[in-house]
Image (cartoon, rainbow, N blue to C red; front, side, top):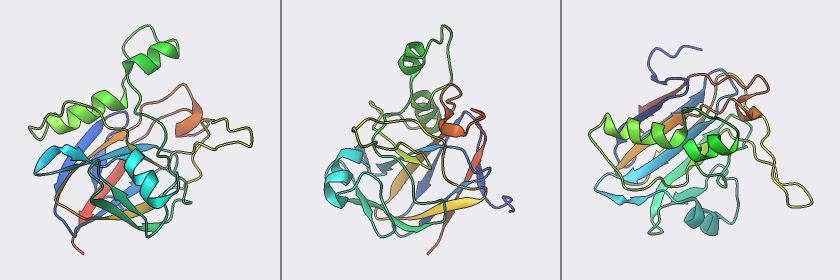
Length: 202
């Protein structure tokens, strides 16, 4: 399970990269239980971005599957799911964690979070955005029970599993290896790990 030709998303941190329309994005759950919050912005206009609300209305699902196309907040094609070896369970409902989320969970001091990771990853590319869109939470397992309640469960993905997506426009993609270590969304051990990604030519 070599990762020598992949970029590392460090545990608890964020990364961002540029990709062209038609290129492929492979995101690997290297250790099998790491959530990867994922964003995509129109490279030519950062006010247009992958939108969970608009995508759910388009695919009529809350978990995307192979062949499904995620849309932007202007209802244009953004990323399309081509492969999924990670069990097919991802999340489009939950907002990125932030300092306020961890305060509600009892943290009295600063806690790493996906919102700050997004902005740090973009800053490394010399980019800033005014808001934090709701992310595509790759590998995140948020079941909906019969009584319509939600729960934060461990991922069903396995070490080395991945998703492969195709860019439908020139994009800035960003990732956060979610630092949640209070709830078991990064596995029952609640231990965030690094993940990896690679941009490939079709």
